[in-house]
Length: 210
Ligand SMILES: N[C@@H](CCC(=O)N[C@@H](CS)C(=O)NCC(=O)O)C(=O)O
Image (cartoon, rainbow, N blue to C red):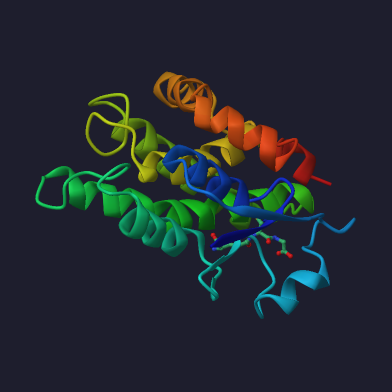
């Protein structure tokens, strides 16, 4: 049995989407952000960090989206949503999967905080501007060879990094990067994405800015 502890407008939307892509049965427990945007204390009853996503699989609790995605794809995917581990695309798949919640998320979060709190420190805003450009140009470049990030098929790495691109879009950072915009259109029109939005509730990362 899989239970997703789902916080509105959050990274747990990725897991709902993944489960819809794989056609797996799951139970959704809904939580609503506090006025400060923090997750409600009840989520700490499930996992000490109390952040979304939290997923229970056969009684085991996991709370890191990259690991959850890798685990579910490995355990239930039957080869779907990932390149063949013997193929050249597999290393790229793992790299993008971990980049999304690692380096890419870090700079997008810094950027969001700087904007949200109106921080006007020239050293920090200078760092933010050049790092955001570096990463978004890099991501745009990764799409130069095709429609997806790791090979010519949609994989869980595409699903994972979509949230980062939606974060960038909500902060008006994408600018004129046509491949990224086309990618977002391509993946968010997938039937499983639409079903996940229907089940997970309204999703608009702009509402996460106070
Ligand atoms: N690296 C974690 C990040 C978890 C995380 O920070 N989730 C956010 C939602 S997008 C959250 O729960 N925020 C509310 C809070 O920090 O209280 C993951 O990807 O699972």
